[in-house]
Amino acid sequence: MLDLKRIRQDPDGVRDALARRGKGFAEIVDKVLERDEAWRTATTSAEGLRARQRTLGPAQALASSKGQPSPQLRSELKQISDRVKQLTDVANLAKRELDALLLPLPNLPDPSAAPGPEDELVRTVGEPPAFAFEPRDHLDLAGSRIDMERAARLSGSRFAYLKGDLVLVELALVRWTLDIMGAHGFEPVIPPVLVREQALYGTGFLPDTEKQIYSLPEDDLHLVGTSEVALASLHADEILEEDALPLRYAGFSPCFRREAGAAGKDTRGIFRVHQFDKVEMFSFVSPADSASEHERILAIEEQILQELELPYRVVNIAVSDLGNSAAKKYDCEAWLPSYDAYRELTSCSNTTDYQARRLNVRVRAERGTEPPHTLNGTAVAVGRTLVALLENGQQADGSVQLPNVLTPYGAPARLEPAV
Image 1: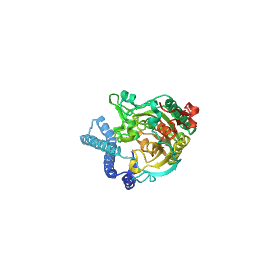
Image 2: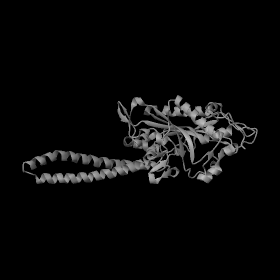
Image 3: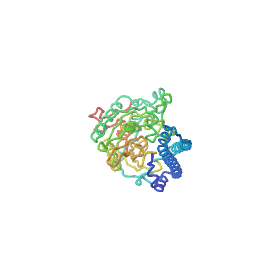
Image 4: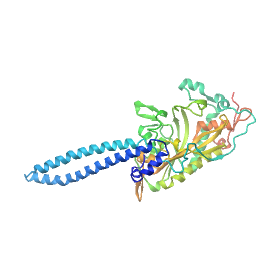
């Protein structure tokens, strides 16, 4: 949620920032200011009348105790009481309308976020493999180790059974990633994957991505599309001490997404599925440190990709493509031979104080309490990483050479050709 004080103090700056997001947002600022003024005016008037009540009440009580009640005083108190109720109703309605206007507003984009309409290339690392043969896609390379057909009979399209050595590769990948996370100060967490609606509103996924969320209406619970939701809510309604920051967590969980609207080549195999596993980074930091923390998270994502020997590029996401909560976002796109293109493997976002305000997370500092900044980043999206490892490591005979860093964690050094 945007800082209402900032909107009051710099409405033009907020309008200009929101205008970078697209049409319609800036106009809402005028409505926010109007409802804010109505709320504050009614609240101030009601408080003034309550003060008058507190002054007159004892006088009326004293007069009554002496058998000298004042009809005039009683009438004035009644009028004040009625007016206070009216003003309170006006204030409450204005506040509800104000909150309804603020809720869908996205975060203000960082000045350094790509202006668009296209993403901005930051750098390219590594060279795509030059095969002396026609490269296969990950499904052909995996063979029966990825069973989409039987999974479809069980659960519908875009689900998969992962079998055999690929299971060992996934487990090794996750365990290796968690060791990297620990070395960078991220505490491992296995969070709940069923959350209440407030957690989705708090992280900005509602109202924004309703079509992507699986819900259990009877239980008022929702399956998360990323453990970011649970990690952000870890300190909801808490006041943290400033010297406890930064707090860094690495959440490992299954993730669930409807992938509404996705079509085309992405629907083949496990690149874009409804259920996948992921290790997610999440940080709570002081506002002054969020820009450097964003670069730090990006550097960790790049370290992982480099040690996995995957060619990739980093892009600064265009403002028009940012999710509601992100002020700035980087994607790391790995080279996928079957696409003959770079595709998103990881992303990391600086959400500044947007999520903390919505989740009522505060930090106690000498200057008072304030919301911390929160950031998130993908350490490893397992399914997509397996796709990249299979396709980039493929050999002429259909076998796959895997990165050496995974073998100490139980992954085979080589996957045999599919049968």
